Length: 104
Image (cartoon, rainbow, N blue to C red; front, side, top):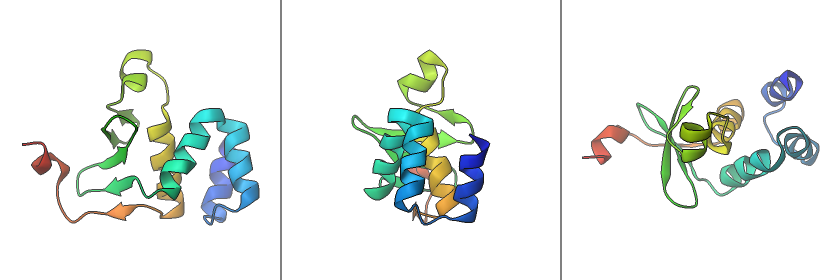
């Protein structure tokens, strides 16, 4: 899998072969992550990344996500993958604010 992340760093344009590799290596989670990226559902606030999912927004901070898949099953969710791809490609929306301010 490290080859995939290396390729993303070298070619952040997400061409068709790279999209196919993401799906082959990461399965349905990779496909959901790319779909979120294409739909512009990844935002970078001053404090966190936030990924808009099917049922709400999920906070992603380094190797942590607030979704149930991560919290209860303890595994890498598609939100974490989406943020990692977004960082590698630079494809995320920058929000000039703090996400915690929206939680009040």
